[in-house]
Image (cartoon, rainbow, N blue to C red):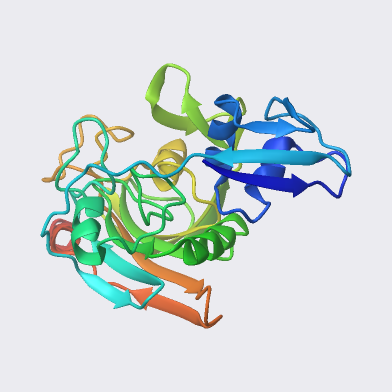
Length: 305
C-alpha cells in the first residue's frame, strides 16, 4: 500500500475531483473506487467522494499495490502505425475486443500488447486495462493509442479531458441525412431499460458532442465523417441513432430489418491526433479504410448507379 498525503489549497472542491487531479497518477474512476473502499481520509476521517474540501485540509490516499495481471501474453499480430518509448498507435481490426472482460479473456488487444510490450505498459487504468488510454468497440475498427508508462497516460488522458485530442471516424449510416453537415449536442447515459445500452438522456448523463459531415450519398445510405468533441461510450452509434440514421450493421442501435451483408457496425476510427506528452510535438495519423468498409462502399455504388 502506498500512502499519499495531500494538502488542499482551495475551498469547495469535491474530494474525488481533488484526488484525481492531484498528480499522483490515478484516474477519476480509480479515485472513486478508492473512496468506496474507505482508502481516502480527510484530516484523519474517512469521507464520502462528494465531500467538499476546505483550504488546509489534509487528504490521505492509500493506493493498493498493483495486483499481478493473470491474463497471458499472446503472440497476436498487431498493426502498429507508430511506436516510441512512451506510446504506440495501433490499427485495431474489426472483431477484436480491446481489453479482457467476462466472456473475452483471451485474444484481446491487451493480450497482444502484453506479448509485444512486456511489462512496459501504464498501470493507471488497472490490471485489466494496462496501457489503455481510450477504447473503441469490438466491432469498430481503427486507430487506438496505448500508453507505455503512467507519465504518457496522464498526459494523453488530460488532452482527452480537455477535448484537444483529435478523433475522426468514418461511418456508413442508414438513410439519407437531411443536411450536409451538423452537430449533435445531446447528453449520453445508461439506458434505464437496458443497462448494456446507452441512450440520449438528461438523467445521470454526461455531455456528448459529435460533429458530422457527408462524404457521399447512396441509395438508402450515407457515407459520413464524424469528429468527436467528447468521447462517451458508443457515442457515434447513439447519436446517429438519435438522429434516426443509425450506423449500418449496428445490431444494438440499428434498424432491425436492415440487411447490409455483414455483422457489426460500419464504423472506422480513421484519424487520431495528439500532442506527444514528452516531446510536446503534435502527431497525427491516418489509416486506410479496412476491406469490409471499402467493399460495402463498392456494393452501395453499384446499387446506386
